[in-house]
Amino acid sequence: QVQLTESGGGLAQAGGSLRLSCTPSGRQLRRYAMGWFRQAPGKEREFVAGIDLSGSYTAYADSVKGRFTISSEYYENTAYLQMDSLKPEDTAVYYCAASRITTGPRSFADEYDYWGQGTQVTVSS
Image (cartoon, rainbow, N blue to C red; front, side, top):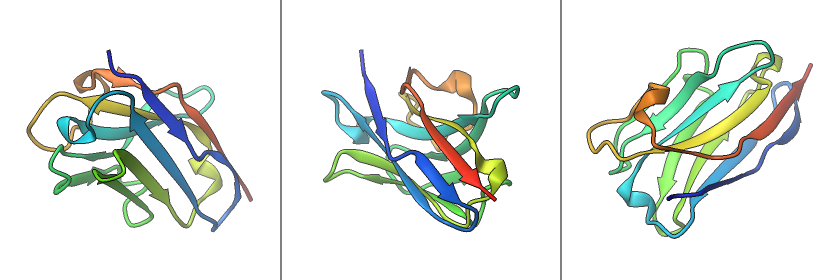
């Protein structure tokens, strides 16, 4: 069983930045494709960004493209989601996820095998 530990959430002003981190316990990051999802109050969980296990290919939701960057830093064994130019509509609980699928970044929740506990991101206007 892989446990994903997230950190980095918090409060930011519109236009500001936050960086989320995700570390798999007892496993090497390079064994998994990684992804970030979010869920706002009263809404369904939605895909934000994904990266394949090689770290070479990424995918983003249209709503965050050009503002968010996903990366996998293998020497740190940590995946990151850099969030810039934040908007109030980015407010949500953000979840890190790991997939054992070896081809391409994954964008559907049912393609992921392990999930973090979630971290709150709140963006004020």
